[in-house]
Length: 286
Image (cartoon, rainbow, N blue to C red):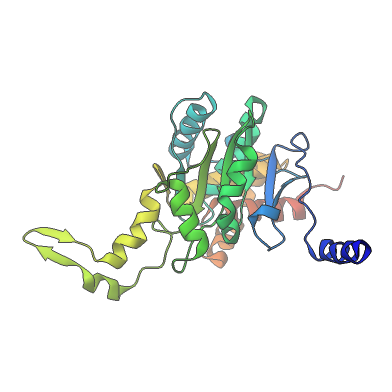
């Protein structure tokens, strides 16, 4: 009988998911939350082998936004009160680059980054438990965040930010980027729920619900589209970074403007992409 029991137990073990691998905290300053899809208990933190090395000094036209987020991050690193941050606004203007630049600047002071996909936000409690006893300071980073309804990740994030008896640990903040201030699509019909009491405006419940998540981020930082002069300055900066001189930057001016028209945007991302393309075509072969 005992042998039959052992066989059954062996078969059951084969069906169970393997235990999550231990986290190598020394392998990288950035980690990604990975899961087998069978629940957060089986998830693990995977070191990022090739971390983006962008510097804050490479980011142009957003000095005020950098200063605001950097100040909040310094408060966090020094153990002072600091806020969760929502970076919103025009695409390609440096929202996620600021977070990567801060990691590169302050990783020697113990700053670490954990990248989490929107679909895995439901695992936030497990991630908090993994890092709660660590001495490092963690930014839980969710890029290009948006929701289409009361998804599991939406509810989990809302609870983690503010609304549960349990919260994130003292060594973790949540930094998120989004093109939407309220993180969810807004429809004209929702405005019909608005009530007017005298001179006061009372938004409907649907609108209030959509605003409630973004309001739980203590710090909002907004990004705006670049004008033509700012765009050209960013192009010149990246061309210089790729080894091109002032004369070459001037020669590339007209083509860079055409490039932005084709892309329908004068963002920092478009400027960087143009500079890579132009420098690659005109640089001397090494």
